[in-house]
Every structure is written in structure tokens, then in C-alpha cells.
Amino acid sequence: MSKHNLQNDYQQIPVPQAALQERIRQGMEQGKRDQQIKRPKRLRRLVVSTGLAASLLITSTFVVPSFATAMAKVPLLGQMYRPFLEQENTGTAISQKQLATKVNQVASDNGIDIQVIDAYYDGATIGMNLTATGVPDVKAEARSGLYELFKGDKRFAGTETKEVVQFKQVNGIWQGRIEYTLGETKLQDTIQIPIVLTDVFGVNGNWAFNVPVKRLPVKEQVYGTTVKNPTYQTEVTLDKLIQGKGSTSFDYITRSPKKERARVELTLLDSSGKEIIRNWTWSTQSVKRTKTGTEAIEQSRLILGNYVIPKGSYLLQPSLRIDLETQPIPLTEPLPYRQQSETHPLEMTITSIDTTPEQVMVEFSTNSSSSQFDTKLAIRNSMYLLKGTEPSDGQDIKAKVTVLDAEKQTFRSTFQLPGPSEHTREEYYLETGYSNTVVNTPLELQPIPFTVN
Amino acid sequence: MDLRTEHTELVQRAIKQDEAAFEQLILLHSEQLYRTAYVYVKNEQDALDVVQETVYKAFISIGQVKEPKYFVTWLTKILIRNCYRVLNQQTAATDLIEQIPLKESSREEHLDLIEALSHLRKEYRDVLVLFYFHDVPMKEIASFIGITLNTVKTYLKRGREELKKQLGGLDYVEAQSSK
Image 1: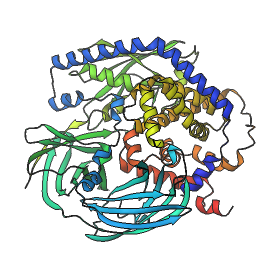
Image 2: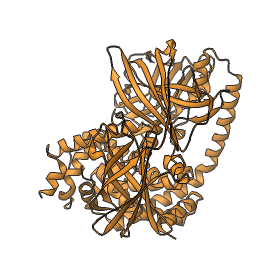
Image 3: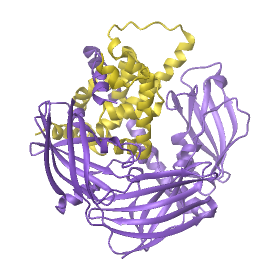
Image 4: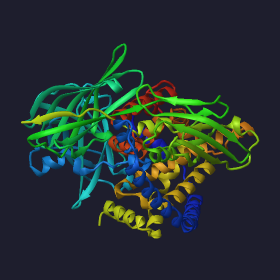
């Protein structure tokens, strides 16, 4: 698919400038009015929430420790977002240590010169530093390029070999860094990497290189340590550690029942259990996924860029996220309506749904008796009422959740409808927030001990 | 001062409630916001509604932006959410009134792409829009949407395949170059 052609079509969409500027002005005016009214209210609610959450967590009695610990970590939706940081690039360490191989290849097209300054192959990461000259004066969103590695051969980089490289101007020179984590196929230590840049700074062209790189010395330690978690029918094996000059990678294998989609994330702890690096989704590469009759086997690689693990004893703490597929339920659904997972212990039951022309009230209970406030918070962020079933994040109405009985874990959600409706039960669907709460409530598995020599 | 630094400074000022900086930023990105909205909602009035709502929401929540360089991604996410809101309203409205043909005369050139995108699964469309029109790297898309990098790759791949099918089963590149 050509980015250039897609963007050409995109750029041809005519923009009604005057109307657009007027709408921007109106949006800002609306914001100013709303901000004056709402700001104090929002601040007060935040303070109350934090205080209550803390006190409830302190006074809670945990019935099932691992589940309760997991529940205590229910993130707010906003906390799911974490920007990718340049400091976590393997290339940051490689540049500081001056370990990249000089390349100095130049390719020119349409008046733009792209130069590959240097390249590196460290552990399971390939990287290149580029500069660009002859660059047209373009908008912020066009200061990037699209590149493809290995002529699109998916064996080397998972399912996709194209990626965006962003350029920034440093001391008047446009610089970009390509960094790619490798897939299943192991490369030779010395290799020529074909790379083609196509759309650069909004200009369609062809900038092709064949970049020689030599793998930096690595230390590999094979462990094969398996930790079983019979409660969740999940096994995690630490296969090996790859210690590069600017990165550390862990190869691990997860075996779990194939009935529910599960993924395991790792957190690196020191031997006393103190957190060193927490895993995030972007740094984990799924290398290979296979299924047998009953189980899913996933080979994954966690790459910690700009981090070289020192000698010592450590723990890898796996956590299991269950990703359930649920559908919004009609308000006419027979009650009680129970939602549960075959792996995750959280259960939720809708016990009553009352509708009036103005509002919908839903009462529900959960089995999470140890951490009622977290459940309320998670549900408040993910339970909503939909007019129709699709799309799932369309015209949604947020719930106002109140605790009916903290001990029994019963709650009531009230949805205020935008206008009176005579057919509320037929028109609206309920997204309970159950699957969202489950995926945001990872289950802690047994830690895997290992030593770096 | 280069343009990127200037942009970062504008975002930093906007985060600190500098209205002039916020307005300047929005104007810088206004065409892109409008075009992306149009790709989703497919008519001028709804696209303008989406932009207005996006500006409003961005204005009241700009303080949530922690890293200035992710401002564009953050803004685009708000925009896309608003597009879905309008799309849902459109679906509800078509049940009540007979659909009137849209009168825009300038749609022909980009109609294929917009139509094709509108038939994609939501997940594929969002990832394609962020990747191709807003130049957001896959790692950042993964982080922002809350899915794995591999899922982003899969969505891109499947989205492109679907797009090709929607565009008549031909490779879009070939189809375009033969025009």
C-alpha cells in the first residue's frame, strides 16, 4: 500500500477554511465557559477519591491474596497510556558508547538526500541513524518517513516490516533513528540489511540502501526455568537472556488454555522483590504463537532498551492479562445476568435493570469482597450505556456508580438519558465494563528466579 | 528556533492554559483534523461538528498532556472518538428519515478511499488513519490505544488487505498509477 497515494487522496479533501475557523473559535468559547463552571468540582472529586481509595485498601482483608493484590492495581483508564520514550532506545546507549558501525551511504531522490550515518545490531534490535538534507518546509505531521526492512520479508520482523521514522532538527540538521526489534529468524552476526524509505517529508520517492552491520558482542544465558500456576492453568518458562551492549532481552514461553486469550507481561525485580523495570505492552514482541488442541503457546521477547543488566540475582514477575470478548447486553436480557471468566476469578452479576423515560438504573454485584472501591472505580470508568450496539465507543452515556452495600459488593449505576424516551429498553444496550475490568486487573503469577553471571 | 522546538513550546504553553498558544496549535493542525474527520463522517457539516467538539474537549483537558511531543496523537484520539459518536448518531438518524444524497461536488477523487475506509473494522481504520495520515509510529499507536505492538502490525496488515478488497480487488498502488 503506498502511503503517498493514500495521502494524495487525503490531501484532495477540500477544506472549508472560513467555516472551519469559525467552528474552532466556537469550540474554544464553549471550552472557556465549561472550564469556568466545572473546574472546582473536578478537583474536589479527585481528592475524595484518592483518600477513600487509600483508606479502603489499608483496611481491606484479603481473602485470596494474589487476586486481592492484583485488584489493588486496577489502573485508571488514563494510566494505560504511556508514551514511548527516547531514553528507552537501545540506540541511546549505543550512541553514548560510540559502538555503532559507520556507514555513510547516501541516496537521493526528488531533491532530498538521505544519509545512513551509522548502524547497529545489538541483542535482538537493529538500528540506524539517518540525516536528511534538501528537506522542504513542511508541517509538523509530515516530518517523518516510511521505511521497509528486508524487502518485506516477514521472517525477520514478525508480521510487519514497515514502520514510520520521525525526524527532528538538531543544530539545523534533520535527524532520524530507525530501531527495529527482530522476529523469530536468527540473523547471522554479519549481515547486509536492505532498507528502502519511500514517503519522506511528504515526498514520494525511493531511497534504497544496503546497510552492512555486525552484531555487537552479546552474552546469552539459557535458563529453561518453568514456573507453574495451576490456579490459572498457566506456565511461564524463562528461556534465555540476551545481554547486549545497550539492551537486555528476555525470551520466554507462555502456555495457557486456548479458550481465553491471555498474555503474560514481565516485571523485573531485584532479589528482594523491589521493582527495577516494569514491562509495558510496546516493549514485548510476540515472536511466535502456536495452538494445540487445548492450549496456546506463545513465544515472546521482552526487550529493555538502554539497559544492560548487571551481574546478580533477580526475579521476573509475570502477570497474566485475560482479554475477553464480550458484547453489549440488551436491557431486555433475562436477569440475573452473570459474567465470568474461565481463568480470571472476578465475577459480575446484573441483578436488576429499571428504566424510566429519563434514566436507566442498573444494580449489580461482584465477588471482589476485598477491594470494593477499586471495583467501583474500574466499573465507573468502563460501564456505559449505548444507543444501539455499534460502534462500541460511539454515543455512550457514562454511569454514576454508587455503593449499595460494600460488604456484599452491591452497586447501582444510574444513566441519565439525553432526552425522554418511550422505548428505552429496546433502544439501549449495556456495556457492563466486565471485560475491561478483567483486562485491567492482571493476575500475578509465581515469580521466576534467575541469576546473571 | 526550529519548527519542532517552536511546536513543543506552543504545547507547553497551552498545557499551562495559554489560550493564544492553544489556538495557534489548533490552527496549525486544523486542516488535518478536518480531513480526518471527513474520512470518518463523510460530510462537511458533521466533519465541522467533530472538529468543534474536538477543540472543545481538547481545550478543557489540555492539562492532561504529559509529553508535548505526543500532543498530535492525543488530539487525534479525541477526534476519532468524536467521529464515532457522530457515526452512531448518523446510524440512528437514518432509521427515522430517508437518506438524502449528499451534494458535495468535490468528492469524486477521494470517494473511493473514504468509502473503503468507512467499511473497515473500526480497529483497522483507526490504526491505518493514525499510521498513514498522522504519521504516528507503531510503537506509539500500541502504547496509545493500549494494544500490543504485534496487534498494531496485524491490524495494519489486515486493514491494508481489506482496503485492497474494498477498492475492487486490485492493488491500490496499481489502480492509482494506471489512472
